[in-house]
Structures are given as structure tokens and as C-alpha cells.
Image (cartoon, rainbow, N blue to C red):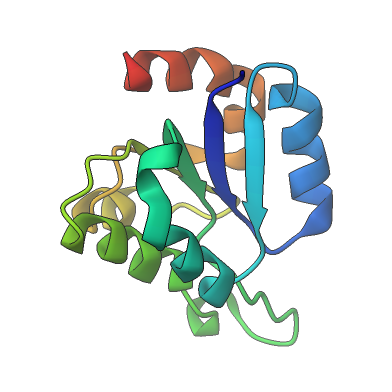
Length: 126
């Protein structure tokens, strides 16, 4: 049985890329929005790590600074529950400082995550 990743991301294409890169090594539980992500919080012990996007309801008609940042709220939910689940924030935008301040273990740009995330996850879960 493969270890299970909690993957919270609103874009199907990003999920498909992630599945292509990581699916051989991990079962990926894809949650598409804040509500689905919050529902996964009821059973965090099933996951070896979480990978969270930040802008979960991306609206192309809005500027980047006007986007919702619900991924941060989900990180806080995990930490408020006392979970030490390793969390990687993977985003196209640089939210490194805020991600770490809000409780993520690591921030990576999405391309960086797809290129080297296997090694990173292995280090985080050991």
C-alpha cells in the first residue's frame, strides 16, 4: 500500500501533472477547494504529508493581491488540531514568508515542486 498525500489544489491540470509525477509513489487524495480540504481535516492521520495551493478559488478577473488565500486558512486548521502533518505550500506566486509564518514546513513554486518534490517529501516524512 502506497503512502497517501493530501493534495489541495483548484486546477485540474495541476492535479494531473502532480498525479503524473507522484502517482507511482503515492496515493493522492485531491481536494479542490476549502470545503473539501476542511473535510479532510477529520482524518489527518491517514496522510504522510500535505501539499496545499494557496489561491483555491482563483479568479482571473482579479489582481493577484485580490485573490483569496484559503490555503493558508487550511494550514492553520491543521496546526490548530495539533497535527504535525508535514505541509508543503506549492504555488505559482511567491508566498514563501507567509506560508512559513502560517505553519507550512516548506514553500515551493509549483514547477520546483514537480521537479524535485519527490526527494523533498521523502525528507519531510522521515
